[in-house]
Image (cartoon, rainbow, N blue to C red; front, side, top):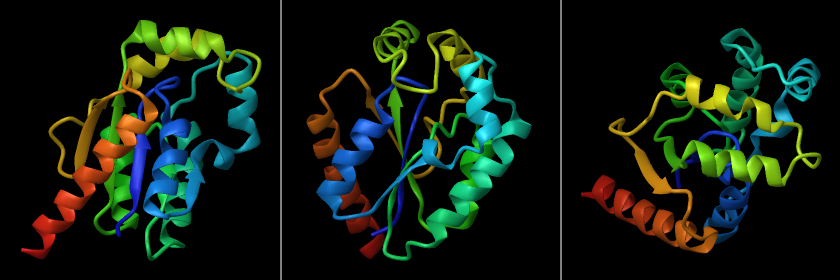
Amino acid sequence: MNSIVVMGVAGCGKSSVGHVLAQALGLPLIEGDEFHPERNIVKMRLGLPLTDVDRTDWLAALARELTRYSSGAVLTCSALRREYRDLLRNSTTGLRFVFLDISPQQALDRVTARAGEHMFPPSLVESQFATLESPVGEAGVLRMDAALQVAQISELVCAWLRSEVRKESV
C-alpha cells in the first residue's frame, strides 16, 4: 500500500477523514499539524497567514516522516500549492492525494465552530483559499466533496485505492 495525503483548506475535515481512513486501511496516521514548528503555531494563533517560507521546514519534516513508513501511511496536510505536493511526492514513490473540496462558507462555518479548540482562527480561512492551487487533474489525485459524511468519504477513497492498485498490477 502506498501512502496517502488527505489535503485541503482548513476546516475541510482532513483530521477526521484521515483518522477514519487510516483505521480502514490499517495504516499509521501522521497528523500534519503536529509537525508545525512553534513559530508557525504562534503566527497562526495571532491570525497571521503562513508564507511559503514558513511552510518550508514543516513540509520537509512531513516528507521525512513519510519516508519512515515503507508500508504506507495516511498524512493530513493542507498541501495547498502544487510545489508543496511535489515536494511530498519526491519523498515517497506512488504518493496519492485525496483533495477534500469545500466551499469558502462551509470552511468558515466549520473553523468558526471549533474556534478556541484549534490553533487555526476563522480569520485565516480566506488566506487558505487564496493560496490553494487545485490539484484536480494532477496524477494520483481524487477530489472528494468535503460535505459528504466522513464514513462515506472513507468508503469511496478505499474503493478508489483498490481500483488504483488493480491498474498498477495490469
